[in-house]
Image (cartoon, rainbow, N blue to C red; front, side):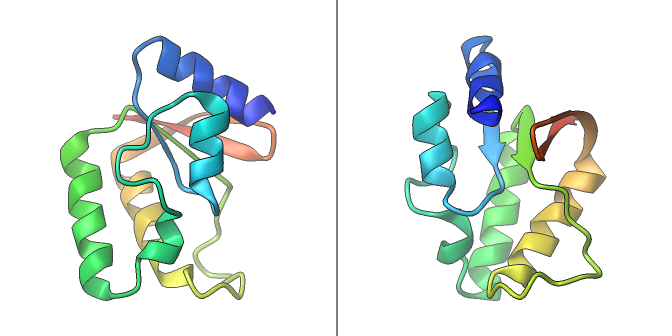
Length: 112
């Protein structure tokens, strides 16, 4: 609830928000934020390196204001099939965004 309320406040102020979480469509619907990419789960949609690279390019081109995601340690895989895509997008976030604050169990990153 805290995460979707925070994303809803950011979206209401006119900021774009991207959820890098499993089952992200639920977070968009609950928060009122608009999905920048699709209405199907992001990580489950990235089946090939080409789709992953295309998503990274779109992500950077859209210059999204905030990214909401769980903390991630790229050296400790969590056993999910989407691990490679998750780490790849996490690296983009850590390169182009700064940790703004924590909300519940998630982190909110702001574009530099």
